[in-house]
Structures are given as C-alpha cells and as structure tokens.
Image 1 (cartoon, rainbow, N blue to C red):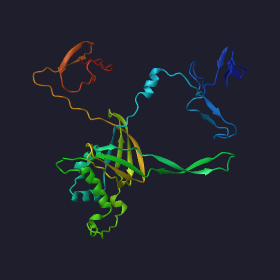
Image 2 (cartoon, rainbow, N blue to C red; image 1 turned 90 degrees about the horizontal axis):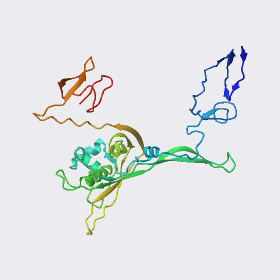
Image 3 (cartoon, rainbow, N blue to C red; image 1 turned 135 degrees about the horizontal axis):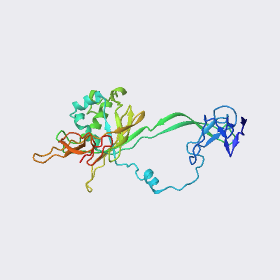
Image 4 (cartoon, one colour; image 1 turned 60 degrees about the vertical axis):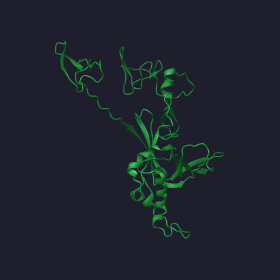
Length: 326
C-alpha cells in the first residue's frame, strides 16, 4: 500500500490511499458532481472566525456580480407584478371613553366604522429613520455614522370623503373626528363653552390615545400576503381647514393628521371565504361519479352532490385511486 499525492488531476484527496489499482478516498468532504458550481467562499487573513481573523465567509450573491443576460421569463417573473397604490384600507378604533362620548353626541361608531374606513381616499404608509453619531477620529479622512436610536415620523395624514344623506345622520366622518378632538380637550366639562371666558384642561393621554389604528396594504386579488401597520398611542392632532366656494361643485374632503409614538408591521396571509355552491334546480340530473373497481374497469356508482373524494376539478384524474371525475 502506497500513499498517492495529495492532488491528482487538479482535485484534492486529503486522505487517499491506493491498493493495487483501487483508489480509496475519504468521502467526509465529497466533491460536487460535474456541472454543479462550487459555492464561492472568501477566506480572510489572521486567526479566528470573525472577518479579518482567518474566518471563512460565504457570499450570498456569488463571487461574480458582473452584468449577465436575463431571459424574458425571468424578467416577467420578477418585474411584471408590482404592487399598486390604490388597494388599501384604514381602520380607526378610538378607546372606550371616546366611544362612550361619541354615543352621547349621537354617533354610533360601530355602525359607522366601515363608512369611515371606506371614505379614506388618501393615506400614506409610515416611515422611519435612524439617528446616528458621527465618528471622525478612528480613520484618517473617513467619517463613520453609528446608529443609536430609531426615529419614527411624527404624524400620518388621512384624507376622507365627507358623507351626506345617511339615515343615522349627515357628515358623520367630519363629526367623528371633531368630537374625538373635543373629547381630548375635555370641552364637555369646561365652563362657559359658548362664552369669551371659556377655558379647559385636556385629558390624560391614556383616555384618548388608541393602539388600534391600522393600515392594511393588499392587492386587487385579495389573495396571498398583505401588510398591516399598527400605530401605537395614536390620536388626531390636527383637522385641516376645508375650503368651500361657489365655483363648480367638487367632492367635499377633510384631511386629519394623526400623531403616534411608533408603528408595528406584520405580514399575514389573507384567505378568501369560499362561495357557497348553487343548489341544483329540480328536474336537472346531477353529475355522475365514476370510479374504478378492483379489475380496473370504470363503472357508474352513484349520483352525489357531496365533495368528490377523487379530485376537485372536472376531468381531474387522481393518481392515488385511479378514479376519474367527469
């Protein structure tokens, strides 16, 4: 038995031995099959596992990032289904004290929640940024910025169509936000509300802030995943003025700005409810179900409206049972 060289035809055999004409190899680290690319790695100098200390890192994008040719089907798969801006929905859920106050003022939020949600004609997805510290003394001519805090936008704007002509009241969208802000200012308990000596004291934050303000971003087919933004400690901070004039009539809109401390983002699956099956009118024959017996012959067994165990689509063959649904 003689030891062969470590490298044979450009391939490395760390623990290989030859007995006669038989090559015995150590398969603890097998070589990839012909035609399969080898995963590129980057080996850094030094000793250790961190970058710069002898560690080995794997590039997730490959060693070659030069421009390459892309086929049409690859571009269609990646680029021809972008998200659209016109498919979203907002939900505004004030806290319990505000709901009670709205009921006293003649507005039942539970019956108007969907109206307010669908009336939101413009909204914006929130943003955030990092606050950083600048470090200029570590390297000559280099300015480093290290993040130390995440800063959220201070407000988010919503624009609504103002409703009219409802059986439970007119201008409910505008009334809803006006009364929410009136509750924050504690105007119902203020003295001299309609006098020049009017004064007030605002309520505590936990009484008017909500953690249940949501913005859902989905697509027109409603299927698949959607994004949900949840705003913490949100409440209306401003109600923009609404211009009216004798010019040609336009839709009346109101813009409300909400402030919040931070937002949370989640991604969930949207499952559409299945539509109920239409009943078959009397006198119309039902679709027969065909199955195979032990001899492999097709035979009509029954007429049934129940779900076919052999498949879900007409003409589908179930390879597990050999049945055919006609």
